[in-house]
Length: 226
Image (cartoon, rainbow, N blue to C red):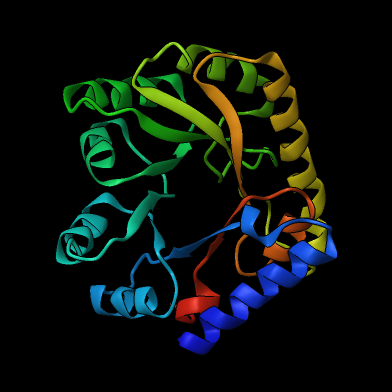
């Protein structure tokens, strides 16, 4: 695992350098869904300190088991409003907010524990019916409404492009999200920044870095095939 993590970090650095970017501007999130606590602990001591989980119930057990380790947890999966309480309790950053309804539930729970919850707005940039996320043409309206919630801070956008054998075919979708983030940034909405662009996974993260990604979500290349 140490070699795999070293290799991923080198690839991130090389991709950043190749596109004239600072590697320090790119955050690695190790996607740990279905991975047990012991292997997460191993990955932590091999150089990963941010882990992304997809399911609240599964994540809760691991977060409690690893509470003595300074891990930062991100929620990257589809989130239902009735799980908002747990998402706010356990996660530093929620990547997958896609509706005002969900944002309202998160804000309500954040108020209860006096927390400002950092969130990303998930955009379904490809328009695929099988994918979660707000539609691109709804993004501005949704973000403006979410900005009114005092206990949420919109920190950027997230997307998942269609799967391609050639990762460069995903680049237009990444560029579209980058362009959308710049348009949102120009609106200068309160409680909204475009600090993060969460895009790129094991198969296409180098292409995503070339298009402005600041968070890459890597699972298979660290933990192997599930």
